[in-house]
Image (cartoon, rainbow, N blue to C red; front, side, top):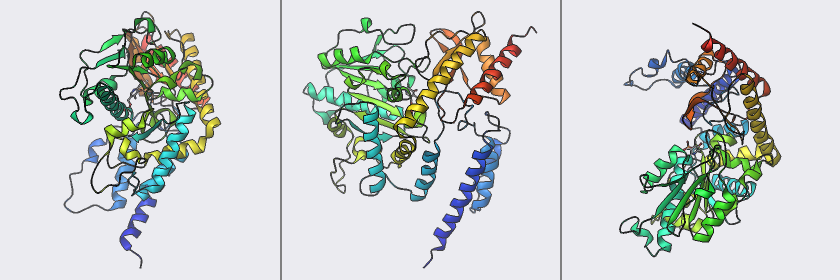
Length: 455
Ligand SMILES: *Cc1c(COP(=O)(O)O)cnc(C)c1O
């Protein structure tokens, strides 16, 4: 017999999907920045009686839709946000109907997709055989899960029992790149590790860790480096770092939230030589791979150590070693791995390489065009990130970024790097075309003329 409640759900689902289609169709022409004037309407007061789904979707579509930043469009160049590939966002829509919990018993097919995606990524990135991991909500959680794993593993190798955590534990050392991402510090705090007595390693003019400044390492040391400096896109010297860490018994962890993907592209792969020598890696699908938020991946060459730190031992759960939920911080997990699976299936290896190469090409062009406009880009274009400043008028950069944002033509944000004021442009959206870059450059030229015009 037909269940009319589920019938209503199907109707609501198709209503929501139709509005999603309308949003996507108007994206190319709409302004990138949001309309904030109606946000207050989103708090009509909690009604005593529930509202009609159609009315809710009306409010969501009009006021909610206008209040979005069009990060899904090709003229958004802020942070390292990326958009969502067609296969990935369509998979998200379908997955939301399934509402699966990604663990082995309740979501067998989504777990199979997650495990498949992990194995594809391990191969694409050239990581060691046996590397395994789990999807998380993002690099911050992935970093935390792996820092906890590294902490527990180093301590247990020193004879400290795992279950004791940090209570009575021998001291560990944290050695980190001076330009490690700000969220890594939060992940360290969440892992109960120091952020006060980090042994910082100087970086060079590109933002790459200076191997000659690395302190003596030992088997109590956790070394934190990165694949993709958020300002310059530069990569740390994994080859030498890996050799030194492996010889000393130190743990090498790589935060590659957006930049680890560069290894899957022949233009940039050599800059990540030796990446496979690390112990653990973090990469986000929701950034460079262009899946919907939120989706990160924690990868470890010692999956049994990760499992020892992350497994959930409830009596009502069977001990399945292969369940990624036992290697992730979260217990109830969305089926985000299936979105990455869909993204990778839709691109194929060559398609992924082409997309990454396009990001790199656009970024190089942006760097050249900004230089021609009188800006200075004080780094090589290593991957997809461009930091620019205006010599002699650095403080104008924030206003230039503000003018571009206000124009609606494109969006990027102000930034400072190595004590210089500037702005930062990230090419990380699958749908960005040459025409979008043309409009970005035209908008910057116009904004610069406006800001620098004599009053
Ligand atoms: C974005 C980013 C992070 C944090 O990632 P989330 O997925 O937002 O948690 C960490 N490191 C780097 C280099 C990043 O770019």
